[in-house]
Length: 216
Image (cartoon, rainbow, N blue to C red):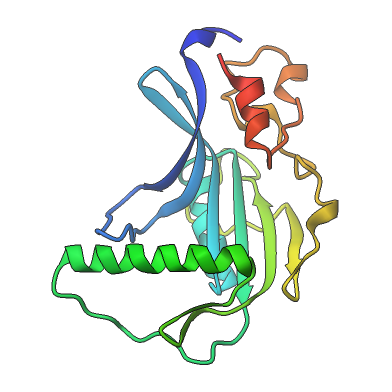
């Protein structure tokens, strides 16, 4: 691999292409990404979108934008469908941004504690159900059919896997490389030499694989 001393793979969360707010809300962005960095330049390789009780078309539109407009070779969308909530959260108001940040941090810590005991929820705080018990999790992969695809194209998934069904993990049979993720999805093709290297299968769900295999 050329120029190996200056090459590394990074995983980036909360990357946005347009405006953001203090709470990270954004348009035309992705929830997470694997980017290839060489010096001061980084290239989006795999974009990730996660939707909680989000409409299927909305989630497809978000991941399609990353693939077609931002030219990510691979897009991965995870749809999380939750069960019913006994009591829905109401709009909360805070006297300052700092107060809102503190409340957000406290709620996040409380939810983390609950998840260690009940990984699939529900998440309840002050007798209010913020997230219902996870009913189903579906993971889908997306690719652009060709380089001429317009940015507004609404793609169809190339693959779909059920990870959780009825609040139980059922993803034991999902292949570690999702049957399609290869090294060429993680590193720009001009860096690699030979189809054999480009097509090397990636253990997508193991961060250790990336650390051990792709370190300088």
